[in-house]
Length: 202
Ligand SMILES: [Zn+2]
Image 1 (cartoon, rainbow, N blue to C red):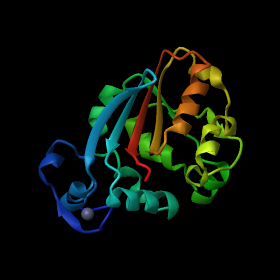
Image 2 (cartoon, rainbow, N blue to C red):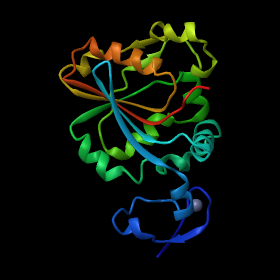
Image 3 (cartoon, rainbow, N blue to C red):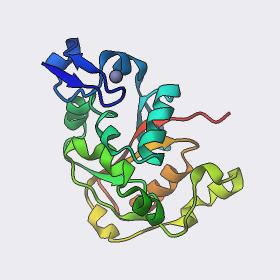
């Protein structure tokens, strides 16, 4: 049986891993260009997991998805990890890092929610941006103040739950740190972080 690759549109037939994972929706060439790193570490007592290397291919795909509204790409990011992640984070509630309302409306979807939807875990959309900002436009001093730009709504939903904060690209980690600070206020059972990739600043 052949499928069409969601990235390059070429027809492809099953290659090895797909016998075990029917969620794979990209061809072997595109598959091999995305480099999984599956890196875990602790920062301030919180467990972080990073799934991919932020290479040229990943950068372009995220840009096409998020910036050019190529909605079909939503399935390509987590498809190879989906079973593993569902097992690993069973019982967790997903808290996505927020985009500004304007960006979500323009795009017609929230890119972080769409990427992580395939984990079949419930979302708690309690974080939002009070002020419209783009992380990449902020200088170091402004990034320290990201906390003031976010806010929380219906935070009591977080209480006593296992929380997994999710995002696409982590740069300095200041938004995630701010999110953790807000989530902590409501005494969840556990907080962990899962991001698609980590972009190192030059
Ligand atoms: Zn392809």
